[in-house]
Length: 134
Image 1 (cartoon, rainbow, N blue to C red):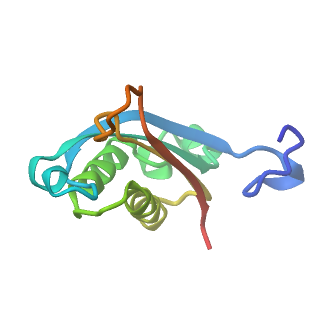
Image 2: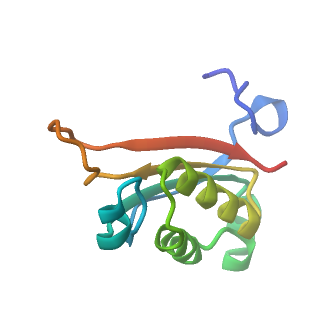
């Protein structure tokens, strides 16, 4: 949507500011097969935080923004938690942790499972969600 009608848009339909961190990688033990839970595999996560950065820009103080180093640690911890059968569950857990730990309006989360046990050649499997503060 280009008219600002997207959920979470700021005043007068303006798009909120975004902080994006891509490619957060850790070993997780998620999957429906026992060998996935036993051996683990890499999971890659991209997160986009919807927030207002004006205060942080004015104060030049990291306390006034979402600290992306801390964000990376939260996402890594969620990847390593579980195990879950579905990456849908992991994706929701990450979104909930971000909304619970950072003062943001909304979050987009994409979880990549590039080593999914699929017998057909493929490039990647992803789940992407958008969640807003209740």
